[in-house]
Amino acid sequence: MRFTEHELTAALTGAAKNVHAAQDKQVRKGQRTADEAWEELGKFQRFQLLDGLGDQLLPVLVALPDVEIPSGERATYTDDEIRATVEERLGEERGLRRKALLAARVALVKLAIGAMPPRADPDALIVPDHL
Image 1: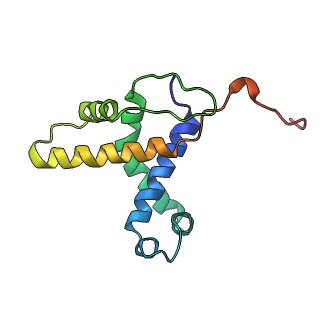
Image 2: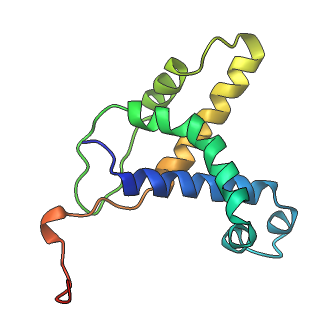
């Protein structure tokens, strides 16, 4: 089953929040949360971060193997599946730089998958009366 647009958006946003939190000194010192740091970013700064991560994450997330995801659960992939998919899209880097990029992208994809919401049951969708 493919990921929905909402799941991909949540994955990208969750990864971006984690990346920004890792770069923010106040978050690292525990003076504020990652969500507070994210809210303080301007719209253009968020766009720049999401755009840069989207180029790295979205092709890998779309290329992950199709798995059946039961309602109420998140997608799960083995480390080997993620690593193989990232390696296919890594490019022509060689040596130590390739190993570093591979490790970073695998960690980033794992963050993104962890940020995805649980799969909703389309049959249990409740439409409000006012619609």
